[in-house]
Amino acid sequence: MCQSKIIVLEDGKAEVVMTDVTLLEVKDGKIIVKNLLGKELILEGYEIDYIDFISHRVYLRLST
Image (cartoon, rainbow, N blue to C red):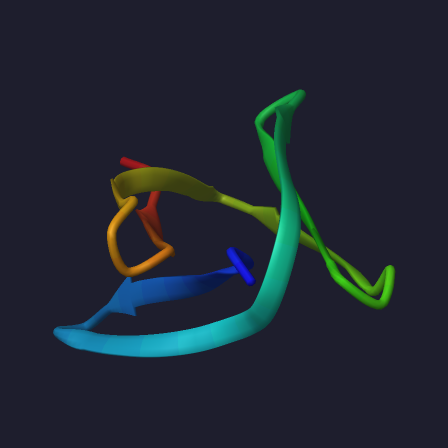
């Protein structure tokens, strides 16, 4: 299985906000993610910091 985790980096901490992510879309300044079961999470005010393709993790940080 190759689903990813969405991790928010904030105040020196890393918090997993969604697991089993199968879709990530950047649209109108928002990051929209959906998991394997179809649950959707919309993150406003964040941007992609980096993606680790080996460990299937997407790291987000507050937009500046």
